[in-house]
Image (cartoon, rainbow, N blue to C red):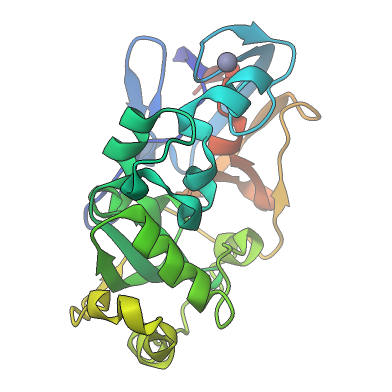
Length: 265
Ligand SMILES: [Zn+2]
């Protein structure tokens, strides 16, 4: 089977284990059944901006061309840094209507074991998708807020006491199974600023995520399609937004958003 795809974040669903799809030109393919199989991925040397759709020699960041990265509301400041949200004050960053829709909705502040222990913010509708994308083995909700700004301010207060980054190498080696998330929530909740304390939730349900991985590598190496345009290897598993190949070479699919590839399985 041969398929063409312009890479983008793999859609995923949490069933007994996480199930992944890869979007192709006309359809999508289920990736879980491909684990254990030889796969060939060939970068065609074409790149398309995920916002304007135009072809570029190089993309700037996050799958955007330079213009879209600096102008699209999808790459606005509050996307990466929720505490910079201003829609609740009726102040626009790039497009107030877009920003109101995105920011003025329930958000959660969560703790996740993804490589290390981390704090993060996401829209409530993005649970558990966000946790899947970060390859978290488990996650717990710390606070539920009414908008993105409040969640961002809680995250900022907690950043002094816990990382806000995924340690992708440890995540891909499955070295994050020893965290007691309930104990961590109890440790960190007192650092939530008093004016946001009302949002700390008593829901202590822990979500566990199992990824379709046959065997975890002991060493990992990130593949860059610009430097290594062809992958021809057995797929060992999928976790987060990474395809993990034999020997530990791993492709961050989301980081290659806009790259056009030919896939043979
Ligand atoms: Zn663009």
